[in-house]
Length: 145
Image 1 (cartoon, helix red, strand yellow):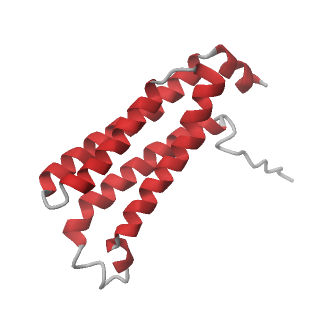
Image 2 (cartoon, rainbow, N blue to C red; image 1 turned 180 degrees about the horizontal axis):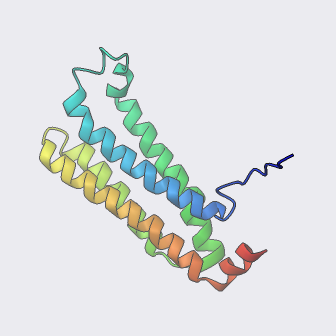
Image 3 (cartoon, rainbow, N blue to C red; image 1 turned 60 degrees about the vertical axis):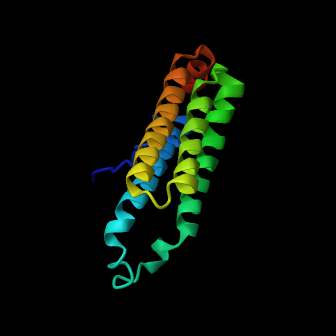
């Protein structure tokens, strides 16, 4: 009889690496939501997805991005690499999201530019955090245990 062994595809990643990946995905989910919403606005109620029009969805996505960053970037800074680069880039990205919503809500091209640059900064923050953790001797020691 053949034995089947289940392999966890995420076992080779640390919790921090998974959180950084989730942070990247959530920031681009926000971009997708903000970019697609004007084009599919009329179709959402027909598909039963009118709740996506609500501003609460945007705030929830941003809240999730902030929570993921708090769980990923902050502990890595304090316990591992001690570099503020990732946190500063994340703060700038979230700041651009906020600026786009408050100053350019009626100017779609400017709002899109700010959202894209903000998402790119958040993505860069998570990728830098991952790289810093890989370079950190303490982090490598924790991964090998």
